[in-house]
Amino acid sequence: MTDKKKKTILPYSVLLMLVALGLSYIEIFKWPFGTFVTLASFVPLLVIVYKYGVKWGLFTGLFFGLIKGGIDVFLLHTAGELPTSADIAVVFVLDFVVAYAVLGFAGLFRDRIESDLAGNLLGGGFAVILNWAAHFVSRFLIYGTEAKTYLLQMKDSFGGTKWAGTSLESFVANLCDNVIAHYTGNYRGEIYAFLYTASYMLPELILTLLIVLLLMVIPKVKDFVSYD
Image 1 (spheres, helix red, strand yellow):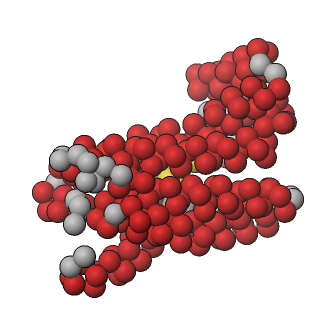
Image 2: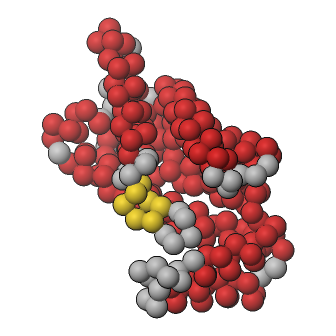
Protein backbone atom coordinates (compact mmCIF):
# COMPACT_ATOMS: atom_id res chain seq x y z
CA MET A 1 0.00 0.00 0.00
CA THR A 2 1.44 3.37 -1.03
CA ASP A 3 1.85 6.25 1.43
CA LYS A 4 -0.77 8.22 -0.47
CA LYS A 5 -3.22 5.36 -0.20
CA LYS A 6 -2.56 4.96 3.53
CA LYS A 7 -3.30 8.64 4.06
CA THR A 8 -6.56 8.60 2.11
CA ILE A 9 -8.05 5.24 3.08
CA LEU A 10 -9.53 6.33 6.41
CA PRO A 11 -11.00 9.73 5.44
CA TYR A 12 -12.38 8.36 2.15
CA SER A 13 -13.91 5.38 3.95
CA VAL A 14 -15.50 7.49 6.68
CA LEU A 15 -16.91 9.91 4.11
CA LEU A 16 -18.36 7.12 1.99
CA MET A 17 -19.87 5.40 5.03
CA LEU A 18 -21.55 8.65 6.05
CA VAL A 19 -22.94 9.02 2.53
CA ALA A 20 -24.20 5.42 2.62
CA LEU A 21 -25.85 6.00 6.00
CA GLY A 22 -27.64 9.09 4.69
CA LEU A 23 -28.77 7.35 1.49
CA SER A 24 -30.09 4.37 3.48
CA TYR A 25 -32.81 6.61 4.94
CA ILE A 26 -33.89 8.09 1.61
CA GLU A 27 -36.85 6.10 0.31
CA ILE A 28 -37.40 6.25 -3.44
CA PHE A 29 -40.21 3.69 -3.31
CA LYS A 30 -42.15 2.20 -0.39
CA TRP A 31 -44.45 -0.78 -0.45
CA PRO A 32 -47.72 -0.60 1.53
CA PHE A 33 -46.55 -3.52 3.69
CA GLY A 34 -43.52 -1.57 4.89
CA THR A 35 -40.44 -2.42 2.84
CA PHE A 36 -38.76 0.30 0.82
CA VAL A 37 -36.04 0.84 -1.76
CA THR A 38 -33.23 3.24 -0.85
CA LEU A 39 -31.35 5.69 -3.03
CA ALA A 40 -28.60 3.21 -3.99
CA SER A 41 -27.24 3.13 -0.44
CA PHE A 42 -24.98 0.14 -1.17
CA VAL A 43 -22.93 1.97 -3.78
CA PRO A 44 -20.69 4.06 -1.45
CA LEU A 45 -19.83 0.91 0.53
CA LEU A 46 -19.03 -0.97 -2.67
CA VAL A 47 -16.74 1.85 -3.80
CA ILE A 48 -14.73 1.37 -0.59
CA VAL A 49 -14.27 -2.29 -1.49
CA TYR A 50 -13.43 -1.57 -5.12
CA LYS A 51 -10.68 0.83 -4.08
CA TYR A 52 -9.21 -0.85 -1.04
CA GLY A 53 -9.95 -4.56 -1.33
CA VAL A 54 -11.83 -7.35 0.41
CA LYS A 55 -10.22 -7.19 3.86
CA TRP A 56 -10.81 -3.48 4.30
CA GLY A 57 -14.26 -3.86 2.77
CA LEU A 58 -15.20 -6.58 5.26
CA PHE A 59 -13.98 -4.42 8.14
CA THR A 60 -15.76 -1.25 7.02
CA GLY A 61 -18.92 -3.22 6.20
CA LEU A 62 -18.88 -4.77 9.67
CA PHE A 63 -18.30 -1.39 11.31
CA PHE A 64 -21.06 0.21 9.24
CA GLY A 65 -23.43 -2.63 10.12
CA LEU A 66 -22.77 -2.17 13.84
CA ILE A 67 -23.50 1.56 13.63
CA LYS A 68 -26.59 1.30 11.44
CA GLY A 69 -27.80 -1.78 13.30
CA GLY A 70 -27.62 0.03 16.61
CA ILE A 71 -29.67 2.90 15.23
CA ASP A 72 -32.27 0.85 13.38
CA VAL A 73 -32.78 -1.87 15.98
CA PHE A 74 -33.34 0.82 18.61
CA LEU A 75 -35.92 2.49 16.36
CA LEU A 76 -37.66 -0.82 15.56
CA HIS A 77 -37.74 -1.90 19.19
CA THR A 78 -39.05 1.50 20.28
CA ALA A 79 -41.83 1.17 17.67
CA GLY A 80 -42.73 -2.26 19.06
CA GLU A 81 -41.81 -4.15 15.89
CA LEU A 82 -39.24 -6.34 17.67
CA PRO A 83 -40.97 -7.52 20.85
CA THR A 84 -38.47 -10.14 22.04
CA SER A 85 -34.76 -10.09 22.77
CA ALA A 86 -34.32 -13.07 20.45
CA ASP A 87 -35.83 -11.11 17.55
CA ILE A 88 -33.58 -8.16 18.33
CA ALA A 89 -30.50 -10.41 18.31
CA VAL A 90 -31.44 -12.06 15.01
CA VAL A 91 -32.13 -8.74 13.29
CA PHE A 92 -28.99 -7.09 14.62
CA VAL A 93 -26.68 -9.98 13.69
CA LEU A 94 -28.16 -10.99 10.33
CA ASP A 95 -29.79 -7.85 8.94
CA PHE A 96 -26.93 -5.56 9.89
CA VAL A 97 -23.66 -7.13 11.07
CA VAL A 98 -23.60 -10.01 8.57
CA ALA A 99 -25.56 -8.28 5.80
CA TYR A 100 -23.18 -5.32 5.60
CA ALA A 101 -19.97 -7.22 6.32
CA VAL A 102 -20.52 -9.48 3.29
CA LEU A 103 -20.50 -6.44 1.01
CA GLY A 104 -16.74 -6.71 1.39
CA PHE A 105 -16.85 -9.65 -1.00
CA ALA A 106 -17.58 -7.20 -3.81
CA GLY A 107 -13.81 -7.08 -4.25
CA LEU A 108 -13.40 -10.80 -4.95
CA PHE A 109 -12.91 -10.19 -8.66
CA ARG A 110 -10.57 -7.20 -8.43
CA ASP A 111 -7.45 -9.28 -9.21
CA ARG A 112 -9.15 -12.01 -11.21
CA ILE A 113 -10.70 -10.07 -14.09
CA GLU A 114 -8.80 -7.61 -16.26
CA SER A 115 -11.85 -5.46 -16.91
CA ASP A 116 -12.58 -3.16 -13.98
CA LEU A 117 -16.14 -2.77 -15.24
CA ALA A 118 -16.82 -6.51 -15.33
CA GLY A 119 -15.08 -7.05 -11.99
CA ASN A 120 -17.07 -4.31 -10.28
CA LEU A 121 -20.39 -5.48 -11.67
CA LEU A 122 -19.81 -9.16 -10.87
CA GLY A 123 -18.41 -8.42 -7.42
CA GLY A 124 -21.11 -5.89 -6.61
CA GLY A 125 -23.88 -8.21 -7.75
CA PHE A 126 -22.45 -11.12 -5.78
CA ALA A 127 -22.09 -9.02 -2.62
CA VAL A 128 -25.64 -7.63 -2.78
CA ILE A 129 -27.02 -11.15 -3.30
CA LEU A 130 -25.15 -12.25 -0.15
CA ASN A 131 -26.70 -9.27 1.64
CA TRP A 132 -30.10 -10.39 0.36
CA ALA A 133 -29.45 -13.93 1.66
CA ALA A 134 -28.79 -12.57 5.15
CA HIS A 135 -32.08 -10.64 5.11
CA PHE A 136 -33.90 -13.73 3.81
CA VAL A 137 -32.64 -15.95 6.62
CA SER A 138 -33.49 -13.30 9.21
CA ARG A 139 -37.03 -12.89 7.90
CA PHE A 140 -37.59 -16.63 7.76
CA LEU A 141 -36.30 -17.24 11.29
CA ILE A 142 -38.49 -14.56 12.86
CA TYR A 143 -41.65 -14.69 10.77
CA GLY A 144 -41.55 -18.00 8.84
CA THR A 145 -43.72 -19.99 11.22
CA GLU A 146 -46.53 -17.42 10.91
CA ALA A 147 -46.11 -16.95 7.17
CA LYS A 148 -49.84 -17.21 6.44
CA THR A 149 -50.62 -14.31 8.77
CA TYR A 150 -47.95 -12.12 7.20
CA LEU A 151 -48.92 -13.05 3.66
CA LEU A 152 -52.48 -11.95 4.45
CA GLN A 153 -51.08 -8.72 5.88
CA MET A 154 -49.14 -8.13 2.66
CA LYS A 155 -52.29 -8.78 0.66
CA ASP A 156 -54.48 -6.47 2.76
CA SER A 157 -51.92 -3.68 3.14
CA PHE A 158 -52.92 -2.06 -0.16
CA GLY A 159 -56.37 -1.07 1.07
CA GLY A 160 -56.77 2.66 1.52
CA THR A 161 -53.51 3.44 -0.27
CA LYS A 162 -52.89 4.95 -3.70
CA TRP A 163 -52.27 1.42 -4.95
CA ALA A 164 -55.75 0.17 -4.03
CA GLY A 165 -57.57 -1.22 -7.04
CA THR A 166 -54.47 -1.22 -9.24
CA SER A 167 -52.94 -4.12 -11.14
CA LEU A 168 -50.10 -4.12 -8.61
CA GLU A 169 -52.52 -4.82 -5.75
CA SER A 170 -54.17 -7.55 -7.81
CA PHE A 171 -50.81 -9.15 -8.61
CA VAL A 172 -49.69 -9.19 -4.97
CA ALA A 173 -53.09 -10.46 -3.77
CA ASN A 174 -53.10 -13.33 -6.29
CA LEU A 175 -49.52 -14.20 -5.46
CA CYS A 176 -50.21 -14.33 -1.72
CA ASP A 177 -53.39 -16.36 -2.23
CA ASN A 178 -51.54 -18.90 -4.39
CA VAL A 179 -48.76 -19.34 -1.84
CA ILE A 180 -51.28 -19.80 0.99
CA ALA A 181 -53.34 -22.27 -1.04
CA HIS A 182 -50.53 -24.42 -2.40
CA TYR A 183 -47.79 -24.39 0.24
CA THR A 184 -47.66 -25.31 3.92
CA GLY A 185 -45.08 -25.47 6.68
CA ASN A 186 -41.55 -24.32 6.04
CA TYR A 187 -42.07 -24.07 2.30
CA ARG A 188 -44.66 -21.37 2.86
CA GLY A 189 -42.32 -19.61 5.28
CA GLU A 190 -39.42 -19.74 2.86
CA ILE A 191 -41.51 -18.43 -0.01
CA TYR A 192 -42.91 -15.65 2.15
CA ALA A 193 -39.41 -14.64 3.29
CA PHE A 194 -38.21 -14.66 -0.32
CA LEU A 195 -41.14 -12.57 -1.60
CA TYR A 196 -40.85 -10.08 1.25
CA THR A 197 -37.12 -9.54 0.86
CA ALA A 198 -37.32 -9.59 -2.94
CA SER A 199 -39.74 -6.66 -2.82
CA TYR A 200 -36.89 -4.37 -1.86
CA MET A 201 -33.68 -6.33 -2.49
CA LEU A 202 -34.35 -7.03 -6.17
CA PRO A 203 -34.84 -3.33 -6.99
CA GLU A 204 -31.82 -2.50 -4.80
CA LEU A 205 -29.71 -5.01 -6.73
CA ILE A 206 -30.77 -3.65 -10.12
CA LEU A 207 -30.36 -0.01 -9.07
CA THR A 208 -26.96 -0.68 -7.50
CA LEU A 209 -25.60 -2.33 -10.65
CA LEU A 210 -26.99 0.43 -12.84
CA ILE A 211 -25.31 3.11 -10.72
CA VAL A 212 -22.01 1.18 -10.68
CA LEU A 213 -22.22 0.85 -14.45
CA LEU A 214 -22.90 4.57 -14.80
CA LEU A 215 -19.98 5.48 -12.55
CA MET A 216 -17.65 3.25 -14.54
CA VAL A 217 -18.45 4.90 -17.88
CA ILE A 218 -17.76 8.44 -16.64
CA PRO A 219 -13.99 8.89 -17.17
CA LYS A 220 -13.10 11.07 -14.16
CA VAL A 221 -15.41 9.12 -11.85
CA LYS A 222 -14.08 5.79 -13.14
CA ASP A 223 -10.60 6.63 -11.84
CA PHE A 224 -12.05 7.04 -8.36
CA VAL A 225 -14.17 3.89 -8.47
CA SER A 226 -11.56 1.63 -10.05
CA TYR A 227 -9.04 -0.46 -8.13
CA ASP A 228 -6.09 1.30 -6.55
